[in-house]
Figure 1 (tube, rainbow, N blue to C red):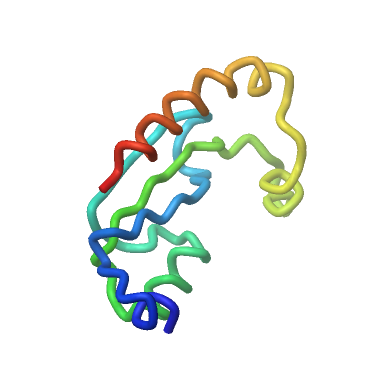
Figure 2: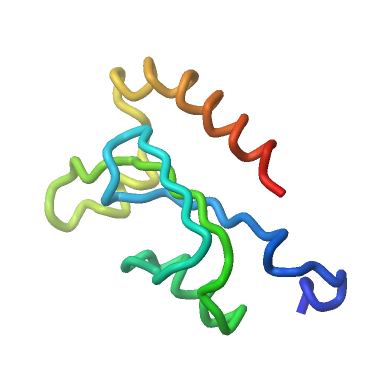
Length: 100
């Protein structure tokens, strides 16, 4: 609804998500594709009725015990991740600013 109301074309949309399947700080950009099991992307696919939008995936790794996925995703960064995060966010920010 909002995209139609504001007349925003799909090529101007960049969806940013976390990704458990990528190692911490890894960035992957794809112009289209499946949801890859990501619930947020599943919902976006349903709402937009397409997979034809650019997605920016930021790896958060999968270093959690079985059944602890929600706590892991919503929890604090560990010390190693905290140390690496500023540099990875700078790279991510530059990529995002250059989009479209």
